[in-house]
Amino acid sequence: MAFNGLSEKLSGVFSRLKGHGKVNEADIKTAMREVKLALLEADVNFKVVKDFISAVSERCKGSDVLESLTPAQQVIKIVREELIALMGKENEKVVFASKPPTVIMMVGLQGAGKTTTSGKLASLLRKNHNKRPLLVAGDVYRPAAIKQLEVVGAQINVPVYSLGDKVSPVEIAKKAYAHAIEHGNDLVIIDTAGRLHIDETLMQELTDIKEAVNPNEILLVVDSMTGQDAVNVATSFNEQLDITGVVLTKLDGDTRGGAALSVKAVSGKPIKFACIGEKLSDIEPFYPDRMASRILGMGDVLTLIDKAQEAFDEKQAIEMEKRLRQSKFTLEDFLSQMNQLKKMGPMSQLVGMLPGMGNMKDVQVDDSKMGRIEAIILSMTPAERNNPSIINGSRKIRIAKGCGMQVQDVNQLLRQFEQMQKMIKQLMGNKNLKRKAVSGLSFQECKIS
Image (cartoon, rainbow, N blue to C red; front, top):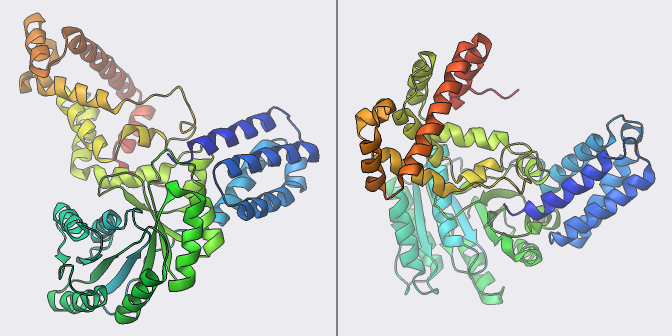
């Protein structure tokens, strides 16, 4: 995740505070100096850092911290609350038109990922809000931009409106709007042109498109890996177009994350979405409170549950509950659970959402191992998957050859699976644990108080 470096440094600061027991103003001052350096190294805007440290320091001087028996926890609580305030307090939702279609203009510099993000957003809003999107190819300058959008549209099964590269983007936007009304598309997403830098021609064209279709949303797509430059871009676009929100891309990369912490404070406009991977499903609403928890190494259980609710089939979960009640759990069941887990995203990403796991360097999650396990199980016959006890030496050799592995790999999987079965039997033998385990099987039933 983008904030790994920052998370690690902040965890170190808070660990040292915990070692003090009770703290005094000098301890707080030292800690805030370290937090300040960590934020600056993460490429957070200097003025934003200055205001943030001032706000946190002022609150830490109160008796809630200095007289607390757990002062470090109180400081963490204050830092988290100020981080949330810095990033916008709460998730800002898309404003839909009272009379469809809703028009969203995607703007930004070249290379920020506007075209791919347009497709990601179309897919997300169709899934979460039952919209019928139309993608509009408004970038007539960049070579292959139209073709790229058409490929993206085909991948997510969303129509793309294009008039080629000889028609003005303003005319394309107008005709796309009329086309959407005629064909029942209640959401129009316009992929506009970008430049390598902000110039008068670009801004005038975007202003003309804005005047022509009166968009409900103007979303600025910002590459979070550009750090401080991302904040300058947001400021410039906002001054010219009065943007309604920001979409941060490449938040999964090895970037310092300063843009996410600066852009709202500097531009005054909320981050509405974050792209956390390359796949067209790798986009999520931006929740400041969840991001603050991730930064502080507290995990992000709510997003993890959201992902689980999307990925896990409720009928399958109920059936699995019945099987576990009867202490039946086969390699076929295990394969089914693995396939559902994969829908949630890379395991390395999911582990980072677990409280306390985000900053643990020694936790190595190898997603390729899941692929090897799957290959071994798929090399088995249905009878072997449902009753592994029949797998003798000759069968193991056949299974290993079938998946290109060694016999010891097959043995290792079978041993691990046998241990898992024993654990499930013990779990189901304990009435209290059984009740909790069964109720926790289906992510659909999770309740957050």
